[in-house]
Length: 324
Ligand code: PMT
Image 1 (cartoon, rainbow, N blue to C red):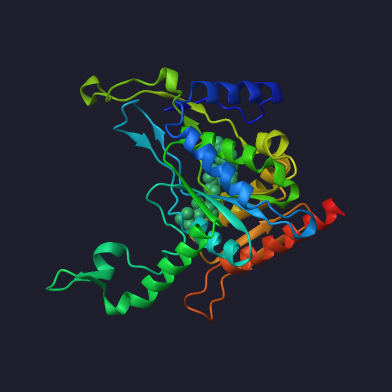
Image 2 (image 1 turned 180 degrees about the vertical axis):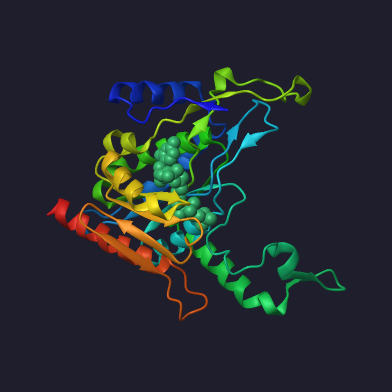
């Protein structure tokens, strides 16, 4: 496999690459439906104005896929269980935010973390009279999960939008950013999704399943334009933006996070290492680097609890500073 590099892409070339990406992407199947849901959600959550105005965060979660064929049999995937995004969504809701949860189909969902891997088959049993009931050991977890999920969705505080491919992800992210534009400083982007760096443009993608009888696979992948700079500059210029930096080599992690902070003009970059990502993250801003740890004295504690607390404080200072 081969990839073209655009690490020093001039601004005009970046905009050309973004145009090419969107023009060549297959249209979203349910685009009008997503736009309608977003419009209703933002209208419901932007009633008040001024300092007490409601805050809305877009949480992205899970990995994007890159199809290799239009009638897709094979694809390249990006690692992410979706745990970070799902847990963070719960804490944002607790902190009073409304959440647009843009997540990869099939990955971890908010309020499901304490359920077993196959909740339907493991949490329920059927009696002789064919009544379905919750198995005793899981009854508390099921009641809490369903109760909190229903309250958030029916209360209009949580909007869940699924994606699978890089094409869907970036098109929906664009729609979300456009819909949140009027929220000004009260909007936040928390970009925890693991986004593909390379893709096969739709135009040059083969229609049918690639045949293994044709011999070794030799294909050229194009670099996915980094949408972070255009999100900050054009899509949502006053929103509070947090991106993530994942590395497997701790020696380069902070340096890479600092580069991303400056290059994409983020308000904060959350740096994490693959093996320790559930224990510790480092929040990098222009003035400080703060290590955030999971509370090890509590078995069920997670790192997202102190992380979201810190980011909510930073968002409050940002609103205070810009709106005063
Ligand atoms: O889901 P879990 O298993 O709980 O794991 C959580 C996590 C490790 C996936 C998460 O904490 C995390 O680090 N997510 C970002 C991983 C990643 O893709 O890092 P990156 O260095 O490739 O990208 C950095 C940022 O650029 C990301 O915020 C991404 O949204 C953005 N990006 C990346 C590629 C691209 N073409 N465009 C982008 O905008």
